[in-house]
Length: 456
Image (cartoon, rainbow, N blue to C red; front, side, top):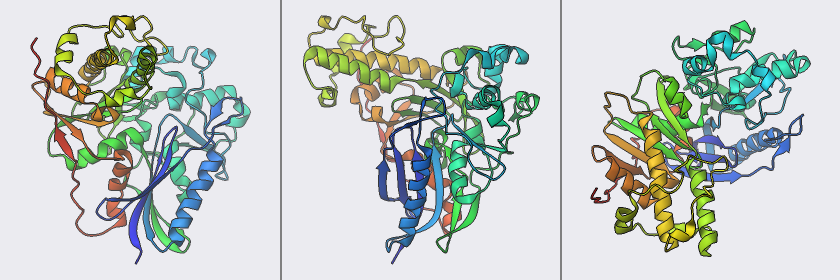
């Protein structure tokens, strides 16, 4: 008998996954692909969207034809900061441009000044000024750089909604995609920013992210979700399942500190330190901060490993040493003078350390302090959050989580054993459209962390 499932496409910059969740939100199948990048019409690297589209459609068709699964619903969680441009016939007219493309200076010449300067514009849109990473400004770039091409554009979709469009053919938008450092949304007025009207740019009116369209795929009715931004999706399982107030630290290459219980406006100082706001699946502000901590960890552990003549992943065998942490705690060695552009602190004299283990403990201590700086950006004056949930790679780093718990003794620090939280969030949002009956209560797999017993 076929198992009824929700299919989720979790599309990251590197890995493209499809995951199947059953009625109880249990993961029953997962596979991933890596597609070689191609170049856009200017020779800059970008996702091979044509191959991704073909793979997605073929994957669903294959599952529907199998004797194992019955696809009841499909949803999409993807990285933000990318847009799709469609003509009047609904055909894509450009590549999916890479948000790492440089933004030419002339495109934004005088732009911020029209809206009371870059600091005020960034504050209102909760978007640090980041060039093409502000995906809304990619629209302005296309309009100014390629006016003849832009004349063909009838519809503009965020990347999650474009992937949904492949199946549903519905033009749509929702707030987690609009609100993720796009420079599109006026958080003060809770509407699109005035600059869009001034530039005569029209975008779809946002709808709830639990919207779906019933589509017939190979003779079977399937609910196709509208899609969701991946950071907001990773937060959804905790918002929907936790009875406690919390801050979520989602760790990976980028570490995102998210507080869905902080409704204070973003300040210019917070913006200057990479503070921003996302939008939750409940369409509420999520005060957040970004830190390139995973990347900083990786490139500096490679340097440490090279110095001590061990393998690059030797850190995985290092055990947390409370005595060593106590010895090194008051030292600030790595990143004392800021984070270099390449994230490698080559000013650190590694010969000063007696062992790899000592150097690695120092690195994690210093990264933890940087993480605390980012955490403070999302803590309001009257902080009501009682817990911190750590997910991703650093949740498995005993030095990091035990030190974090020790430095925040007034909070409870937990690691979460939820795997694939991003895909799971996208599945949870669409559960009621796929199934009927009582939804299974999700076990967050929380493990309370025992802090180091530090003597200051």
